[in-house]
Length: 245
Image (cartoon, rainbow, N blue to C red):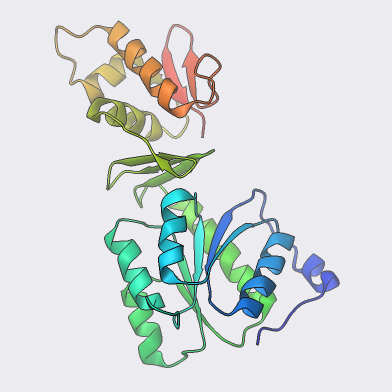
């Protein structure tokens, strides 16, 4: 069983989490699942619990998940099968395996299937929280290199050319996706209209800068809650646009 920490110990641990990252906990042992949920929520994480791999896959497709804590010995679909499935489907969300299977062969198999860390049961809660925090920090530092961005309720998987809002996949045209990707690559820097024409449309002679404005408006309609008062795609007067992430 996991070693529970009291409130004073947690306060001394001093988690550096500044936003509510979303954790998907795939664990069929209820005591462990809800004990972990309480500890994670105390550290300001949002938590979804799945008792089976199938339930975990459903949550992956409708929720913005930042990290998965995965048991291996699940009913039906095993943790290994779950991990292999999400990697084959293009999900790059980091995975921490939490399992009683502590043999080297088990760990090697998990890492080869795409796990980011492996913790054996029983475990110390404070160490587990530190590992979750470290994985999220590395994941945040390497979003661009991994082809994945997340800002607000928007997720962008560049490799699969998928954009989700609140977990729901958006229907993006190729031009809209390329325009969004061009803004993302600048990491908040301003993109001039002429630059976007060159990158997205290859600056054909019959395309004018007004075309950029039209497509930006269409992109806002899909990404913004209130397109007339955008939170993400901001206009820089007389210059162009920038994406606030």
